[in-house]
Length: 93
Image (cartoon, rainbow, N blue to C red; front, top):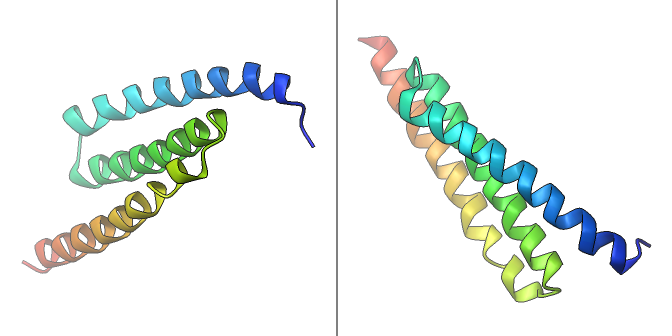
């Protein structure tokens, strides 16, 4: 088991790294070279957001905050399905 003082130091550092990655992916989503690159960056942003959300729940020791990760995970699945269908239709034309 990890000591609570280690988590108090480690979680803000990891949150900073994920926040920096989130900012970089935001730039790719806004200025991406192709649509698949933008979709992939949006997928990774959503996964990073889920991790950030769960780290915040762990930091505050609140399992109720972790429940919010479930709709985000569902949203990324639906987004992938819709965009994949759109890209398949565009490729057929």
